[in-house]
Length: 548
Image (cartoon, rainbow, N blue to C red; front, side):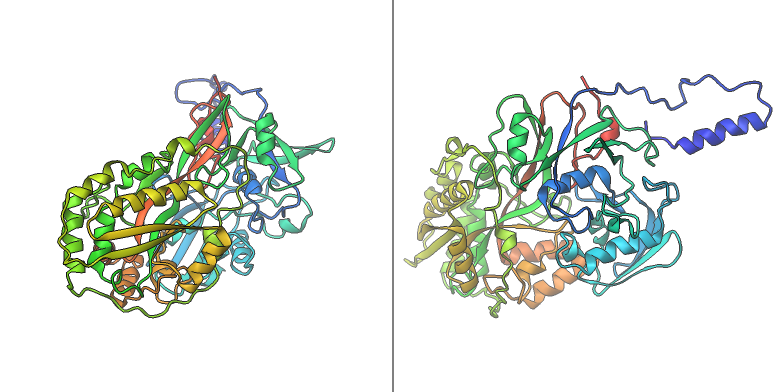
């Protein structure tokens, strides 16, 4: 169904100029026809009017979904975390300097053509406004400039071969965000006001051609940013995001479809490298080997997570790496024997900068009703308990661990307890779970008052690990420091040696990845067939939507 209306018009005109007796009959096998059955079903989206109408500055979670229907970026991030061209036709780059060539068939709703100046203005708005949800993606950008009407050059302060994955930032027409209404966009829908009621209507000039079955969306005004779930439950709102592994997970029973999306939200175990025993890499490797990540995902994380040994999603293949997602009792026993038996294998432990970056851990802002975790609260360790059969022979030395977890999130508490059970099954290991309210949890992280903590952070789509693994990194609460790791990360970001970073990470295991949480979109049952959203776009592939 994707086609360019201008191409068809030019084709018909050419036939007339050639003296054709008449126009060909439309509807032939090779002629694009908008034959999708248009749905007349009600479709509502939440709209928090107190948010900004500038898509680059609006940081409300409700309006992010709305913006995905209205605006597009240079790229879209796919489910496999690759960058797919949208407004960008092609690009060249060496990892530091990129030149992006724009499509020449894209117009805004107003009819004005997309230019490089619009892209520069949109990206610079994010770059120079710390309140923008996209600001952190551009902190290493030294310059953004239009080198022609269709070319944008971006120069970075350090190489990042995956920088295009960060450029799904919405683009709007330069100057239109000051109009007092929605900034002018290029997306498949455009806002229309009739009799004081706002709707989103199909953008008939959308560069990707016909839309699918949904051509009109009603905007449901919200007076509070946390009111969307109530409106969803009453049927006024038809589609929204709702985190599953949250303090108050949504109660979405009844006529509802739930769709999972891949994400860059990493669940992991942070290590205090000031602890002399945990500073030994073999001890950390042993603790990692003792985990059944698949079991944790299937139980405590409710099948809403993908197990991970490396901090990248999806897990790499073909790298001659062994990524065991189940517990390996023999390996754990051997590594722990070597680690606690006095073999030296430590790294430097320079104090990390405990900068306050608590937003990465803030899972108290989810609003919802329902509490559905009890059925998954299986803390007996499952298959992990088989490790108890392995005698470690550590010479009587005991590894005592206090595992810190945010008590406000019952899913994480249950996961921490299962982890503790599997570690306690190891001879010579004693683990207690320290459950603390969110504010206390953060305070203890910043003061280093933990041995191990259960953490979660939303990584960027390029999976930049420097906040967690760099000396002075904003999330490096455990004080990890390694010149070799810093060099390996730099080589991976430049594209020179990605596998070298993976190998070194497995050797040092500076943090212990558990899983990547999956996102969740809830939608009224039967409203859309062929619904397949991408990680950051609930309207991805909407041209293939059909209705039953």
